[in-house]
Length: 588
Image 1: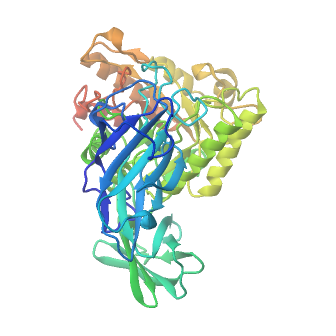
Image 2 (image 1 turned 45 degrees about the vertical axis):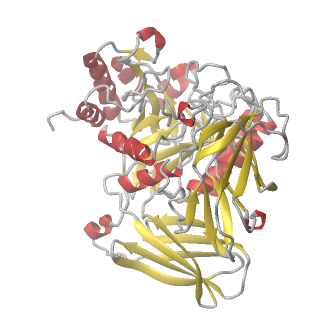
Image 3 (image 1 turned 180 degrees about the vertical axis):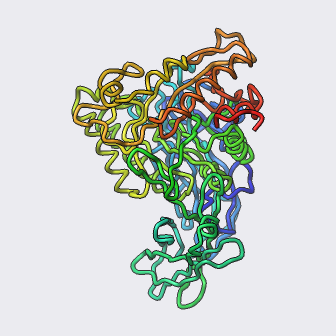
């Protein structure tokens, strides 16, 4: 990742330092070591933030590893302010020391954590940070997403990710500082909810100034008193009243209008902390069987995106690569992505916010049901929602996919309870977005009914979903994927229906067909384009659907069913893909 891109785009400070780059590294497969004082063999080097399984890390070891260690020196001057050490994501459990002093531990492979390391810093000389990552490759009860438990990737699973895989960085803060910032837009009220939480030493007479701008126009400039450790306010924006002017302020993929924000923390009238941020006015809701963006029906054209790269795995090669993925999704005619089994890097969400791309966020699954598995999933899912709550691009939360981790929904009540509990927990943590309890089939508590159907015969697909009585013919009689669509006691109540996985046409331009797979296969550019165009015509014109999600964005290891090759080269011209995605004639 670039050294110059701030890792947390919605809470930005000027004073920060990236710790990406070369670190000392050691495997500890037998978990013989428990602290930096142990005789760890530091003879290897790794390039952070790439995982040791990735060739870009300089290690490229895809074997089974229970534990590994990282170490590096850094320079920073001590002062009256505080120094916070941040980790974007470490898979799966992490323990961290600074100068031999234990500072923090965290469990959860996809969410960030941090520590105030001020008291651990020495007065002179370089500082040393050491991290132990523990990641049992055979543990099926932890949220692991698409990471394979077999030695070599098979079927729809990919290489493992161990240890640090997102940016490590430092920032300087005041003794009292803004630690959490949440934005909640209200389309109907034409206002923005702002929640500020503080950390560090608390004082009386703390105030926070909030300025919101649209370009050079100041939309709001207010001062609020901190009560306890937080300030929660609704900030009314000047409503222009006229639809054209009003629409210019609304965020959508077609017009991704962002509102810049500056927040300043004052103590007794003196500024002690300053951060920049952004938000947007947008609302994604449900009206009967239709999905609504900013009060109007909005058909979704999504593409399923695994978020992997050949040499860097779950970590993007660069910030430019994240931006390019957003640009490519838009160039192929999609207005959104379903990030599949991955909590994506915040920098991707930044580019989706800025360039205009909707994102469905999905929790990486565990593959064994147990109280421990559900406890781990709840903790990490809660952290993911907290991290990404304020991004305008995120429109739907999905805690479960295809009954993974809850495999006996039709027979075991505790499995059902888990899905229903996660649905209601998610709605409690964020009441502003729709939630799909379990995407694909066997739905219970859900705001949207997601269907996975990989029948690649366009005529059969049309016949299946162009029905006059879907309750009887689809939900009671037909079973796409061999699974019932709704569980007993949870009939379809008129929720929007989205075909959230379909297609999966394999077309491999670079390898023999036997080495790759998809749900169907094309043998030429012409056959690939014709089949894609025919499928997209069906899903675009089937009234039952409020949207669709095509599988998939790019080839991912053995899966050759992407619209793009793994290196993001289009398999057919982008203009052809875009026209078919939007169901328009190419010459238009």
